[in-house]
Length: 215
Image 1 (cartoon, one colour):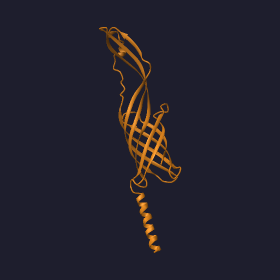
Image 2 (cartoon, rainbow, N blue to C red):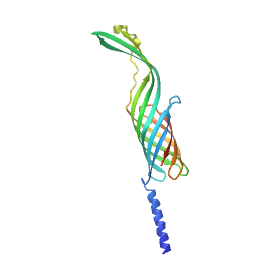
Image 3 (spheres, rainbow, N blue to C red):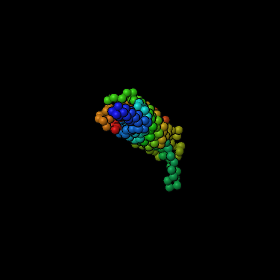
Image 4 (cartoon, rainbow, N blue to C red):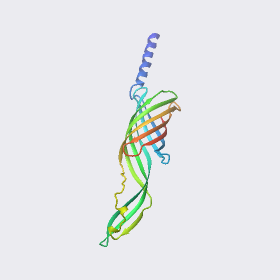
């Protein structure tokens, strides 16, 4: 009888282990903060929420969303003119300002795969994600200089030339490559440290360093 109970216990334990390794049998949720930049003079912040579910013992499916503020420095002068009618009289106005930077408030939706190189107290990993970004773009400019003229012929020629224009994107696509490691703080909580580079279809590519806790 004892042998039968031992065999049944052995089968039950292995069955439970097999169940634990089944795809989507467990998941983690993590909260991350950090910085991003494309040069050291343009550092801004990240906040991400990430959900991970197991596919195999080494592979995890992950999805995330959050908020990323990115700044891109610009340096050139914008000149333009316009026409207005004041008291039935046509008037012409010229203005000049410097574009200082473009700022992006990005709300990404990402889906990716994480490969755990090894699993112990320290668990290094590699990951790749694809993302769709909702973007709110705004520009920062210097104070504008303005002039008025009675005739279009009075406007200096540099204001009449074709001028640069900045596109204000509201969405983009991207690929994220990352390397990181997690550290087991307890039976529940894990520290996660990650470096990633984000390639974007419309805005500047950026480097990111993030740190988070998942459980």
